Length: 152
Image 1: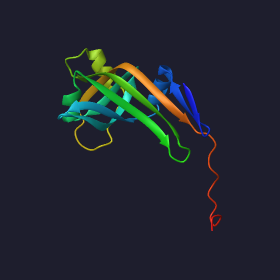
Image 2 (image 1 turned 180 degrees about the horizontal axis):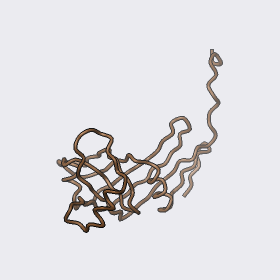
Image 3 (image 1 turned 45 degrees about the horizontal axis):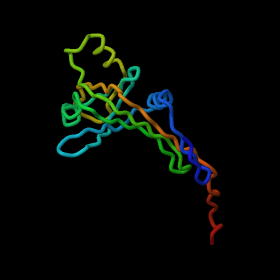
Image 4 (image 1 turned 135 degrees about the vertical axis):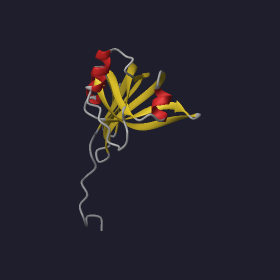
């Protein structure tokens, strides 16, 4: 799907392209239903194949997401060119504990998900995608560069 406006194009991304883009970032947003509202949390993540691995604390994110349908979104925006992309994943989240198969726990811990925020982030979660979609805005013709004094 491509729409053109002032030279810009909106492109739908294939699932393969969505996963390729997810692999380029390490910060995303996890959407859960909790406390009578949909809540959005910034999280660090890594990929294990198509599964999204998140390290977190024992708070609202973990309790609301465990065995729940969640959304996960990652994007990259360039304000100067008014371009960018966005990937949305819908899936089932599950806390990974020592009760899981040893091989799954080991792969999860080896995923490379490293928290940026201080504090205890000793809990692991996997998001198993049920659907993935993405869009990219490709820039068209950019406005002329600003020249100091040109508008006086």
